[in-house]
Image 1 (cartoon, rainbow over the protein chains, first blue to last red):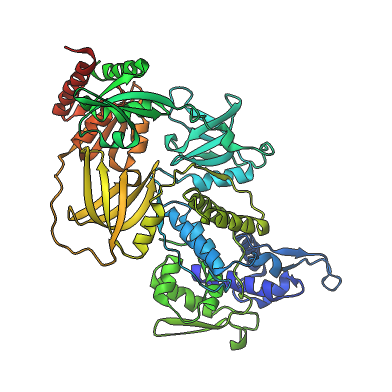
Image 2: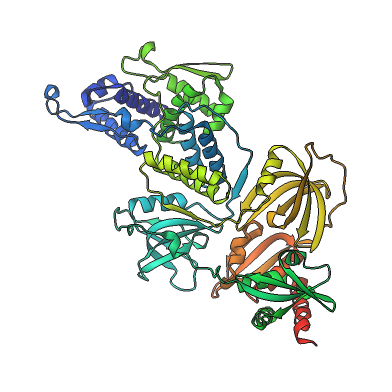
Length: 311
Length: 310
C-alpha cells in the first residue's frame, strides 16, 4: 500500500519535473503510472497527491488555460523552484557545517540538520579538509518543543502553555523568538495576559505547547532585538572581598585571588565577584577553611543563608 | 515503525541525487547516512528502480545497479540535483553554526559568520532562534583540541573542587564538551587508571609529554567517594538546582498543596550534595538519608562558629 503510493508520488514528481509545458490532468491520469480505478477515484487520488507533494515543500505550478485543452488546467514543477540553489560552498565550509550539526546530538532538530546536510552533500562539493576539533554540545535540558515553536513563530500563530511559576499557570503568548542563553533555551514573546514582552525558560514548561490553528495572528515588531530583553547581570560591577583562607586549602579560590598578607593561621586573599549568591555558593564549599573578612554585608548574607538551612 | 508513504517519498527523492554524487557507495554507509536500516534502504532502492517517466521503458526508468552491497546510479532521470531545503533543515543548520560560533574566539568565528551570510543570502528564511552566549574561551581549548586530534598524552595540573586538592595527572584526552555554563574534558586518566572529567577552567597547566597511547599501567587509585541516593524537598525558589543537575535527577513529584517538589536523586557524592544544599539557604532540605540531614546541621553550626564564636 505504502509502496504503491510512494511509487506513484515519485512518478508524478518525475513527470512534472521533466515536462517543459504544462501537463493536463487527463494526460497525467492516463500516462503517469499508478493511477487506477474509476475516473472519479483517479481524480481524487491525484488531488491528494498534489497536496502531499506540496506538504513536502514541492511547488506545483498550475498553468493558465491553454487554447488546446479548453478549460483544463495544466501542471508542472518548475526545476528552479524544486532544486536546491546555494552559493558555491567550499569543501571546508561543508565540513564546518557537518561539525556544527553534530552539536544537535539527541535533540529534536538533529534529523532536520542531517537531512539538510545530505542535500548539501549531494551538490558535488569536493569533500575536503577535516578540522582538528570535535567539541560537542550537550543539551541537558528538554528541547522537544523547539521545532513546534519554530513553526508557530514562522506562521505567526499564538501559543498556549502551562508554566511553572508561583502565579498564573496558563500563559497565552505571541511567540517572537527562541533564545539560547547560558546553556538554556528560552521563549520570548508578547504575554497576552500581562500585556508585555516576557521571557520563559523552556525547561519550566509544564505542559506541551498548544499552537493556534490560525495563522498571521500578530506581527513581530520590526528590528526586534530578543537579546535586549535578557535580564541584565551586573557584569559591569565587580565587587571586592577579603577572604581568609586556611593554609593549603580552597585551592581554586586561591588560584583566582590575590594574596595580600598572612593573618595567623590564615592567609588573606582579595577576590572579585559579580553575583553575590553565586560567590557565596562558591565560598560555602570551603566551609570552615575560609572566613569572610570584608565586606560585612557578604558575611551577613552568608550567615543568613546558613540560618535558612537550619531554620 | 509504520513510516508514512510521504516520509518514504521524501527520502527516495533525496536518495537519488545523493547516490549520483556518491557513486559506488555501500548500502551500509547509505543506511548510516540516512539514519535507517539496511533493509529499508534495499527496499527503497528496489522501489526507486521501478520509477521513471511516462512510457516506462527501460530507457525512461531511473537506472541503477547494485552489486555486492554497493550502489551506482547511471540514469537519475530528472533527479539530478537535490531538492531545496525546508525551513526546519535550514534553521537547524543555521542554529548549529551559531552554537559553534559562540564557542570560539579564534579565526574560525569570522569564517563561520561569512558562511552564515552566504547561506542566508540565497535562502529566504526567517531564523526564529537567537543564540546569545558570551563564551569564556579557555586558553587551553585549542591546545586540547590539537592534543585530541594527535592522540597526544598530556601532563596536567588540576585543582579538584570536591576534594580541594591540587593533583598532577597524566591523561589521554578524549572529548571536549560544553554543558550548562562550563566546558569539560573527558579523558582517560592514567594516574587514577579510570575515565575522568575535568573542568577546563580548573586545569592550571597542561603540557604535551608524548604522542603515544597511554599505557595501561595501573596508577594510584583515586579515593572512592561515598555515593548514595537521596530524596530532597525543593522549594520552587531553588528549582534551578534541578535544572542544572538534570543528569542526576531520578524522579520529580509535585507536593500537592505546596510550592515544593519532591526530588529523588541517583547516587551522588554525599559531600558534594551537602555543600550544594548549604548554598541554597533552606531552599532545599534533605528528606533521605536522615544522617545527611544531621550532617548538614552540624556543618552549619561549625561555620557559624567561625563568625559568631561559641
